[in-house]
Image (tube, rainbow, N blue to C red; front, side, top):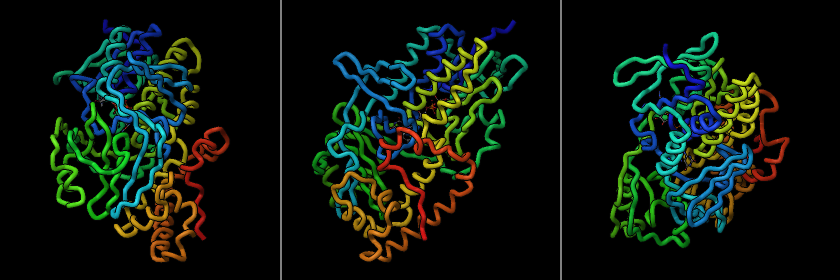
Length: 449
Ligand SMILES: Cc1cc2nc3c(=O)[nH]c(=O)nc-3n(C[C@H](O)[C@H](O)[C@H](O)COP(=O)(O)OP(=O)(O)OC[C@H]3O[C@@H](n4cnc5c(N)ncnc54)[C@H](O)[C@@H]3O)c2cc1C
């Protein structure tokens, strides 16, 4: 007779590994199916920042903390009540510097520890080791294609080395990322509204040594060059002292005399193709449960819940599964938590996204200079400030004022059908304690006369 598991976890990213490890530690018989041969190897683009604060709320919005000692780092999740030990590289980010074409600068986190660079592969390898130690059966090179609810459990259909396999369990967890096959197979995408399509592609991420950057404070900063005529480039921290950026951006910036000197003596220590497949950005699965299957992490989100969001989902869903198997309503509790703890479940998420990215869509180099000069050296997110009060530029720069207000009107109209999918009262910020913390970054209801 085929082996029957308590729970099958599909996907060995941060969400799936945490779910599998926690469920096994709680005594469940767990099978983890991962399509890659090495689960801790990452191919998908990731800036690898453990955020303590966000420039704008995006994924997981419950408080997180870190405890750093010489031996290890503890990532602490006070909400759910767990922590994860990590022993890889850690570099603090104490500033984010956004730079306009003529080098006006805004710093949303000036002299503020907003997060750490950490090595996602080392983090995942740690989780995998603990999952295996707890007794999880890990099957790599095994993509799962379909999940099917049965009267007393679930069947998962997978393929290992071209051989079709069927696995059975009482419960399953879909942690197979943003374009989840399991979510699709259960018909859960039918109710979701499509917001946009992000074409696949990507580039080559690399670690650059010897970069002669002359922006004061760059050593511990996230740098963002906002130059519409050549595109936007982010430069982050990585490894020992290296910087992390796209190789293609080095080629572009090296042709501009102002920036060429930064790169004249560099060595590119490590390059890695890290792209993204095409993504259909959908409204979140506010109710992520289908019978005996629960979708977690990116599988239930428009794009990304962040690494910390995924592990929090993994932990919470494992606890919920244990409860369900003991006859309690764990899934209802999980759903309530998911709707509050991850920002995409609030309509403010889509308002924030479209407002935040308006600069990239409508501004020329001159416009970006004008806006950044206006907020020079302030700890703000310029577009969100302007969205809140476009009047401040109406007299001095009527052309940009018109562009901004028209642009805002247009994007707000575009997201009307998306916002209509949220039930009334689902803005998680308004009634509770989040409001105070996130006030500067929440896009208000924009009322353009
Ligand atoms: C450009 C970019 C930058 C980012 N930067 C950051 C950052 O700085 N900090 C941060 O916290 N987050 C960042 N993120 C987000 C973060 O990477 C994700 O939110 C997080 O990894 C989601 O975890 P997950 O476990 O839900 O899914 P994933 O990490 O996508 O893991 C899914 C796993 O499932 C496997 N899988 C997929 N399909 C199948 C299948 N059919 N069968 C079996 N296995 C399957 C995959 O191989 C993968 O291992 C970034 C994302 C992007 C795109």
